Length: 217
Image 1 (cartoon, rainbow, N blue to C red):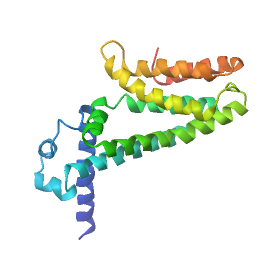
Image 2 (image 1 turned 90 degrees about the vertical axis):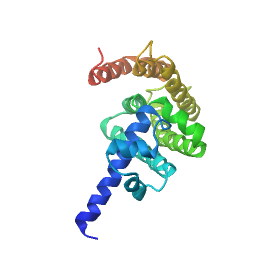
Image 3 (image 1 turned 120 degrees about the vertical axis):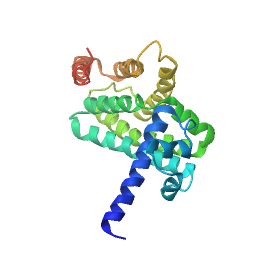
Image 4 (image 1 turned 180 degrees about the vertical axis):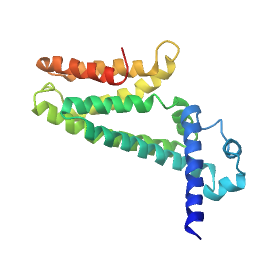
């Protein structure tokens, strides 16, 4: 196999994955068969099955791609902020930006038809955020940024439960409030609950900068 042919096959496989990722995460899994995906790409179903031998295989790869994108987004947030408060805010904003691009139908379809895949995916996403949040809460408490009465591991567990519920709640309120506003208000409640009283001005300055950065008036 020539190098050019090999690159062409890799590119086709990536294009199939990106098309399935876009369709599944924006509209849900169930509306799209392998025939639909092939038609969207103007390729034959035979070509599609050459790279992904079943619909489940393709869905598995979409889940892996989602995990990778989530981990990369958090890795980028790691490099941008200087102290524990800013990093916690960056992690929460990263989760906000990520979740608002996902249609809840993706997860509901996944849980209904591929429960093991759904459990594995959610476990992976939580693990990506958990250790980072735990580390920054511990360091923030030591630095006096967060309340000394905060139990880091318990607070992170509660926060992650809230993130999941906020995601579902935002979907229900989509006609009343923007999805990102639901996440943002939940983020404010959490941050004001853990911040040390003397660090409130620092939190409000950080929130103000974050809103300007995201184009929120």
